[in-house]
Length: 270
Image (cartoon, rainbow, N blue to C red):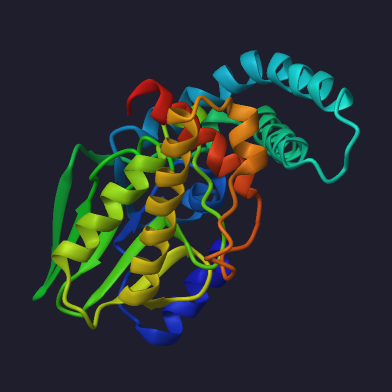
C-alpha cells in the first residue's frame, strides 16, 4: 500500500515527505518502511526497533510449540459455540500469521526507524508543531500517538480499533489497562472538537473514543468481579458478556481474547 499512500499525499501537496512515524512494530504499520526510508526519516518509540530487528527470531523459536499446545487444546473442545474455543482459534490464527511473517523476515530490507524516543518527541514543521507521545504499553510495548494541536487532530494508532475489539498483543508487552491509560491521556490533553484517527476503522470524534474507553473499563470491572468470585480464566471467558456495546464487533480478536488478557493482568495485580 505504501506507493498508493505516497500518491495520495502528492494529490494534497507537492512538498517533500520528510518524516514517517511508526505507531508500533506490526508489519501492517511498518511494511512500507523500505519505500519511505529512501526519502524520509522514520520515527518510533524505543521498543519498535528491537521488535523489528530481533523479535522475529524469538517468534520463530517459541511460536511453533505454542501453536502445537493450542491445537491440542482445541482438539479436546468439540462445542462450536464454546466461547473459549473461539478465543483459542483466534489465538491460533494470529500466531500462525505472525510466525509466517517472522519466517519471511529479511534483516536487509526491514528499514527500522532511525530516530527513536522514550516518552515524548516534538517535531516542528514551520509553524506546525507535532507531538509524538508514548504513555504506556497498550497495543504493544512501543505504542506512539501523534498529536497535531494546530489542526485539532490526533492519530492514536492501534490504541483504537474503531468498531472492533482491540488486539492486545500481550506477547509483545501489550496491556488492557494500558489502553485505558492512553485513552485517558488523549481525553485530558485535547479540545472536545478534536478529530480522532484510529489505527483501524473510520476517523471519528472524541465521543467515540470515550465510548471505547468505557467499554474497556467496564470489561475490566466485570473481570475483576469474576476474579473476586473465584472464577477461573476459562469460566470468565465463557461467562462474561458485554451486551451493552453491540457496536464493538470481532475483527481478528474475539471478546474471549480480551477477557483472557484482562484476566491475566488482574490476577497479576497490573
